[in-house]
Image 1 (spheres, one colour):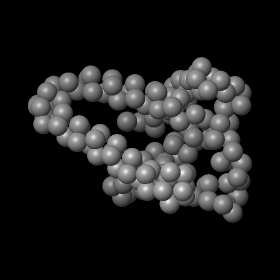
Image 2: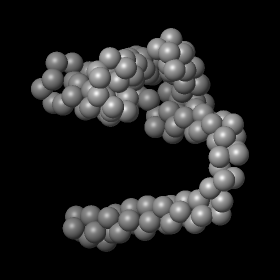
Image 3: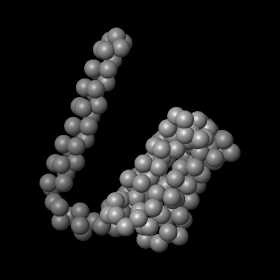
Length: 148
C-alpha cells in the first residue's frame, strides 16, 4: 500500500471518529480534533518508519513505540499530548476500525471458508479466555484494594 493511500485511510478514519466522538460521548469536534490529528500523525509516522527502516517489523510496533515515547512523563509536550488525545473516545475510534475489519473479512470470504469450523472454535476460546482472564484480574485487583 502506498503512503498516500495510508494517509487517506487515516484521514477517513479520523473523520468517522470525529463524528462518533460527537454522537456518542458528545465531545465537540473542535475539542477532539487536535487529539485526533495527533493520533493520525503518530500513525502515519509509524507507517513511514515501517517502510523506511529495513527491518521486517509491522508498522503497529512503530506506532505503539512512538506513542509510548511521546507520552512518557518528562518528554517535551507529553502532558499536552496526553490531555489532547484523552478527548478522543476509545469506542469512537474503534468503530471505523471494526468496519474496516468487516470489509476485509467480507472481501476474503473464500479464505475464511477454507479455514473451516476450526476458526470458530479458536475464536470462541480466545473470547472466553480474554473474558475469564479479565474477570480474574479484576477480581484480584479489587480484593487487593479492598473494594470487594
